[in-house]
Amino acid sequence: MTHLERSRGALLDIVIETSFSLAHRWHSLSITYVESFDDDEEGFSFTALAKFIVKRIDHLQFPSLKYVAIPYCDDSLDFLSPTRSPALEHLEFEGFIAEHTDFPPVTALKTLKLDFYGSLEDYPSFPYLIPTQTLTNLSLSGCTWVFSLRPNSIHLPSLKILEISCLAKAGQYMDAIVAPILERFIYTSFDSDDAPSAAWRGFRSKFINVRHLSFDCRKDTTTRKLLHSDAIALCEAFPGVRHVKLKTNQLPHLFDPTLSNARARRPIDLCAELESLTLCGLHPEWLKPNQFSAWLVDRQALGLRKLHVKLVHFPDSGPGQSIDFKFHRLYEVLKETASWSWTMSH
Image (cartoon, rainbow, N blue to C red; front, side, top):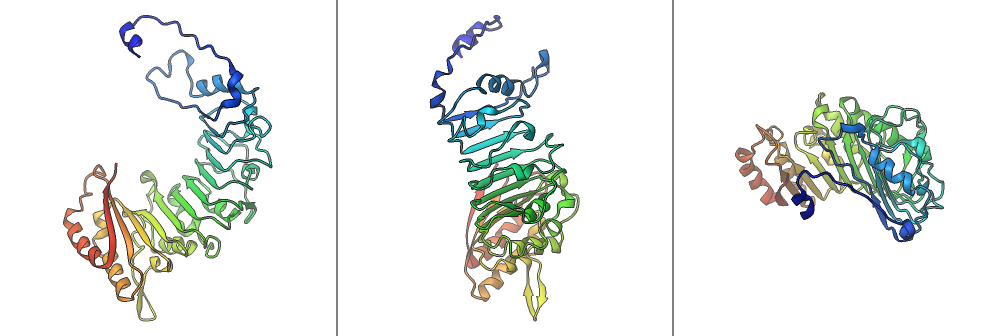
């Protein structure tokens, strides 16, 4: 770096020369795309770096390779086969193209992260090609509409963590999978048509082992207000959840009381084993009705377990997000009814 700085604008001759005789020692490979102001010059494209590297290593053997992360690449990826990389456990694709990855039925793969943005147009049955037996962590993202799935047709016997982000057919995919030991579910909705009332209806007994639930809606897609039925559908789908994380400007009806047998019931009451809540943003409109505070008071009166409540505040969350005028009232309730912590996040 010192030599480059001293050379100022002098033209450079760069030669990268290496032998791949040490391929047996490779433990991880991560190809990272960094945006540049010169990306459009001289025919540079998003795929250039990945294609350059993959083309030169695709014929090699990597017996110790465990971690691979690759951006958008439209070349063959033969080096990822179980014969070339038998120890591979973590695989991550950005801009995934199914045509160039032939997943084997038997593999040691434990973690798989696929981003479908701009791809998968011609592979409606692709989810059935994913190796499922040893996967413990699966992450799917991207707006694809072409999945063609049958209920309870994708078996993931080892899956413990599932993350779905902006997947157009999230509900259909969840209906297709069978994951008996799933413990953690992280969900970001695609758009207003993928509300919980539509995506999670009918899943009451399917995800009873999920203990950690994180729910979010993308800011630019929350055109339809989430309703009381959405809150109920989410809580019914994950009745055994113990730890919940959500933003307070979403699911406003989670603590809405309705009368049932002369007693106030809220959608959140369906989660009878709840132990902790992480509340992000502390939106003042969400706090205004004092429903959350009233729910905590009712829980205490019923002798239920004391929750741990974590308040996460985003100082750059924009105008109208100040909670100073409401926080003192919330604090008074929290210190009597729950254990709690407060953190600032960016």
